[in-house]
Length: 133
Image (cartoon, rainbow, N blue to C red; front, side, top):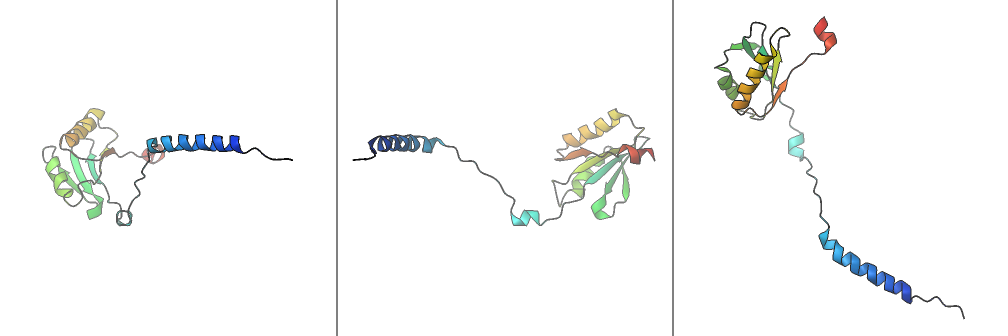
């Protein structure tokens, strides 16, 4: 008479069941933060540009409001940025320095923006081909 002895299989299944029951509560679940529909439908805000000219004078350009340059002083810059960022405090600020201006001046402006708690600061660069023309 040919019979399959299933007792060892049942023992193995019970051992596996106990192992899974013990380890299942220890598993950490991960969470993924997906964007909501309201956030993704908002268009991105054009960044503010702080322009450092060759003579180290400063100008402020808001492309969202026409893109005209406004001459500002270094002392007046934080107040003008706060005024421009009233609607969107997370609006990015880009620093565009003239090619002939010293890097120390650019870093000074960046340091002043960081002291005024500007959230997003970036450097505006031109590709080499566009800059040579």
